[in-house]
Amino acid sequence: MQAFSSKRTIAVSSGKGGVGKTLTSIHLAAASAKHGSNTLIIDGDLGLANVDVLLGLKAENSIFDVITGRVGIEDILLRGPMGITVMPAGSGIAALQNLDAGLRDELIAGIKFVAARFDTVIIDTGAGIAETVLQMNRLANINLVVTTPEPHAVTDAYALIKVLSECEDIPVIALAINQVRSEDEGRRVFERLSEVASKFLSARLVFAGSIPTDPAIQRGVMARRAVQENSNFTLAGQAWTQCFHRIINANDEWRTVIPKKISALAAPVEGTHT
Ligand SMILES: Nc1ncnc2c1ncn2[C@@H]1O[C@H](COP(=O)(O)OP(=O)(O)OP(=O)(O)O)[C@@H](O)[C@H]1O
Ligand SMILES: [Mg+2]
Image 1 (cartoon, rainbow, N blue to C red):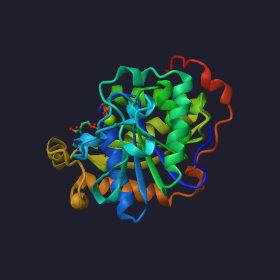
Image 2: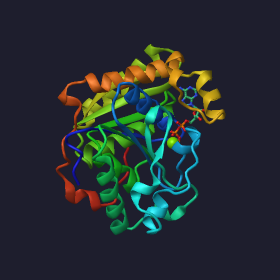
Image 3: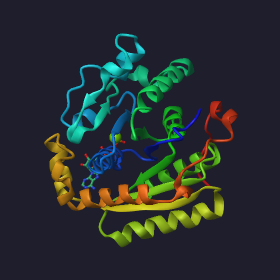
């Protein structure tokens, strides 16, 4: 499985659910679109998708309809705010979480076909270390893990980082700390994780940013307008924009290489704690 070598493909993942992956994905996509980049956001949280909902869009069809052969993958694309293109996945469809390897490969081939037209591709994945999440990460050349400062979220982030590092051979993993009370709090979480990773893992962690808890974000979520042209005026919006620019300004060491242990991909993922 090859990453899109010529473009920026960012997989946004987390160990624990509910830490802000989708909001991070949406805001990175907005920052990318404002930067003038032709941007696609893929809802990779198969079966529990909600990118369309948070953007106030109505998805008539989704990845599920592509898999069942009802429509082509091009037909499900939606135009979101700021010209972002959205590839919605289905919600409440258990079958999407249990795709067999053949269907998953077909889906990935379709995603790659569509993604090839875009300069920036952002993949919002599901929480945890399921095969689909790992597969989405294999498509990316930038692997971003999101956590909050809560101890159980940090433990689960480390578990995911361990799998990305040790099973997927991803050498550089970016970390964003969401819902912080201060920039320093985020930095401290990053430094703690980075120190442990440097002792036990082969991957190196890089700091992508701290995003504050921001009531304006919750209001946006409730209004199904999680991101808007003027999101840059919110504290969290500014932090996510900074995060995007940190990512695009980072030098090549951020870019991950194609995983070496392709054979390990088929194997079940084992326990992840050190
Ligand atoms: N920076 C923030 N400021 C305020 N609220 C936030 C922030 N980030 C996340 N939230 C809150 O957390 C909720 C969950 O965020 P989001 O849906 O992005 O998480 P997720 O990791 O994608 O969840 P899931 O694992 O279920 O896909 C949001 O609806 C919002 O209420
Ligand atoms: Mg989500």
